Image (cartoon, rainbow, N blue to C red; front, top):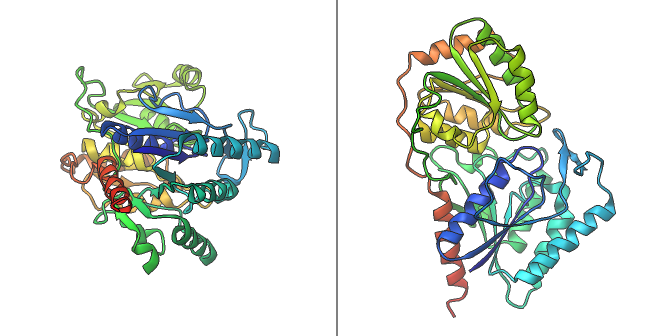
Length: 380
């Protein structure tokens, strides 16, 4: 099968990471998978083994998703967006995919509705119509108005064959965050979590006994690093801060100069997941991929869910996962150095969880589900 996966990450990079993982899973089964990315470059993500087509990129204005910016942080023009749409449709026409997958839309990215609508109309009009599926994570941003849920239902009913929910319904069922109508329920396919293969413990045991603090690959998380530095000054625990986003190396050097001696500060590392096996604890936000890293390693964790603006997705996920031993949740409004130390002290007394292995093969299961649906459509 030829598979076209369309994704635009606007703030963090989790959506793109998940799309790349899906593409690798399709490729591993002999399919040709292409990721069409409409977000900013993400140099910390490996793309060497995935074919990526890059649209003129956009990003959100921080947590204001009603405004789109270009690489120079200037608001994009209507002409810029028309160029994106033309390029996107040209890829569809040139590739003529057997399967089209949209990441998040129509459950999010409504600011890109015109772009996705044009893509779906063109795909549905092709002589050999592709199987069309939506790919969504476990927790969505709940619709602020009934009309938003109704819009998603209408798109699913009119244009989609399936909705792939990358979750374990026993841990984070979709209805935690989204009203699931009977019509939508009929097209849901739970795949399990889309996680990369489990990392192996670090060969050099890097991270042993450390508190590892990370905040993903986006431009948020400064408050977590600040609280961690305050906590480090109050005790003798060993800390390692891993900075993501643009200019991470320069920021790490500047911060290290002001940090206490029990702190290492450096850019995000490709062996981060291996380090978690040896760490005393992890401190992070609670994005989809970060949560899976914690679950797969079994490391004790303090989640500080991203809740700026009207964001509630990470808070819902964190509260659901806090039922597991060795996981604590601190709201951003509660985050201080002393409170962080108290939370870590509480976790010290809890047994270490076993690494979670079940329902972590969501990428492979997605390929299996899509293959069965596609073959069902072409059975005649």
